[in-house]
Image 1 (tube, one colour):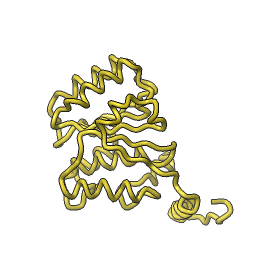
Image 2 (cartoon, one colour):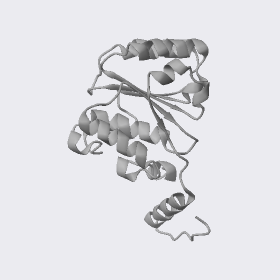
Image 3 (cartoon, one colour):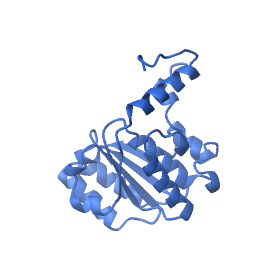
Image 4 (tube, rainbow, N blue to C red):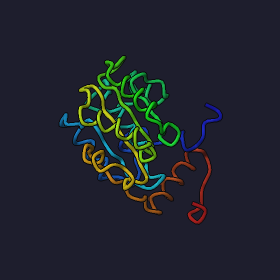
Length: 202
């Protein structure tokens, strides 16, 4: 794709490519390996630490057709998530869809069986921006979730969430990525683009 943004081109496509979140990666991989994935996850941390990327990787992994190498990146399900065309993976930004009607519609659709995979995945970014009514509606579903649904909530501001929502989720706190790791990753991406990035510039 000629006009693909670099941040999209070099976004982590496997758990091994994730930078600076070893604890989260290790925990999620262990859960997948043991078949003990939860029904709701809460990813907290500053902007740019990889919360949405990790949510997409988890969405790939739980529905991957090759469990031994999940996410494999080449099965139909993995490719569909990467391309944003997977019918069972829904991303919403709570900053734009804050109203209770948005969440009720999501909950109604969540009751339906998956169309192409084992699980329906709902990724709700900036979840702390939901209205009080929308958060309460979401809580009811988190309390009695359909067996085929996994919610992945992401937020930069977890203290604004209802404590009862937090208690229903497996929480992962994303650390700020160390400067040296960011620099190394930028230089690696620059090299892949065919030019050299000096340490000072990186």
